[in-house]
Length: 428
DNA sequence: TCTGGGGTCCTAGGACCC
DNA sequence: TCTGGGGTCCTAGGACCC
Image (cartoon, rainbow, N blue to C red; front, top):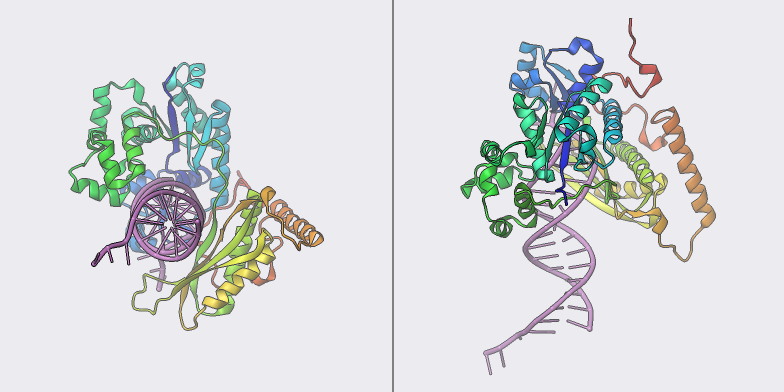
């Protein structure tokens, strides 16, 4: 029986790489991509990292550094990134069908059988790296190991050390080499070990990945629970985490945003909640699910400690599970009205659809209006189709407001090169 | 002026049941 | 004086991931 082998394919500086791909003028320049509202840096080019720009740094705090070195800041353009992500995944799927899309820029592959077609795991990794570069212009690292956690580790090695040239198969290293690399890796860099647990581990004199590997799993379980025990076993080469080829149905759907400008009126909060509810309902219908309840939350700006603070959240159950934007919006507005307090500068609002269930397994009720339900079904699918074919917000609900004052800031968004005919790149 | 958004899982504790 | 034992379900909070 052959041991499982997992490869993690992870894009390099993904968002920034997408921007650079379509804007040759950004080549060799320090570039960052900002979060929604142009808030924090969420992706940095190699040049920006070299200048000391930290992940998650608030943009306004690095203005001076940016001016001094000419750092270019792009607003995030998720339409572009998710399109490029899909292209990469389809290339990978063509090379290895056992694939789990783990995030927008990462996929896990099960390669122990298919690798022979390429002449081995290392050869396969290089082939994937080269093909993705050729067809999308994007750089990736491919790291392989007998467990997902070790594949992550392997990938991290190629990201960090150029001698791997973007591809690493742990099986090619000797045991003492593997342990050596682990001894160079801080325990906080291990997948599954966050800052809190890293701190506690350090206090227990467990500083490196090697130290964690050499700890007793049962002792770790006693201190940190079953999840960390699994991590230790995975580091030791015992595979505990399977490939999830089909994404399990989601258990909740959240849409929330910070406002571009503070909001005080109930009216404007209403608009934001209506907008987010409509977005959430689109996702819900795309999943083929129904929501049993909707939760609404609003909050002031926690960074403004001298301003009066208020935050609240309220869940409203629906009479029957639904995916109709109108039913969800009505419940959401009810929740908002119950929570709203005048006299605060609100910074953020959001909705959460909870109690999700598959549409096909819906429990019928005694007094159901089938005709009404069929009309709702037709209306929603017509709206979704129009918005899919002619662009988002072709048809919206009036409650969402037009060109609202509180809309997100995005001062430097690149064109949606690959998903809008009107925004195609032009070659002169 | 300015500080993201969207998820999952586990655990502990309380309510409730027989 | 003395006050069981075992189970489920739900929720809040805490941790992690990208």
